[in-house]
Image (cartoon, rainbow, N blue to C red; front, side):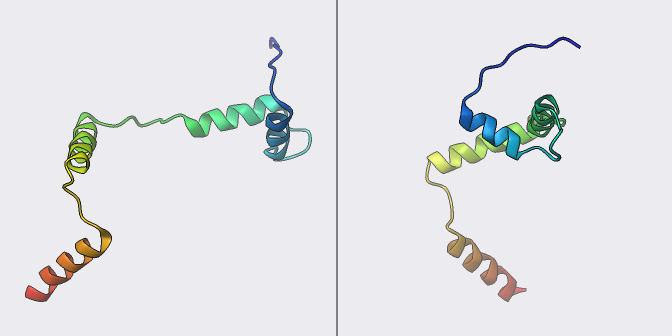
Length: 81
């Protein structure tokens, strides 16, 4: 295994030390664990991306409901059933 030096601030080093699961865990293990949680094994589908884009357009156009408005509308629907 090859090694390299990575310069990090003292604050970052303290945080990495705090993330160790056990005292002798290597920084390589900690960093790999962090990278594994940051990677998305299941990318978004085209349909999901289109839905997100549509939602963003709705938000920018002001087509949205507050929680209270949505709750009131749903309650009205349930009352009619």
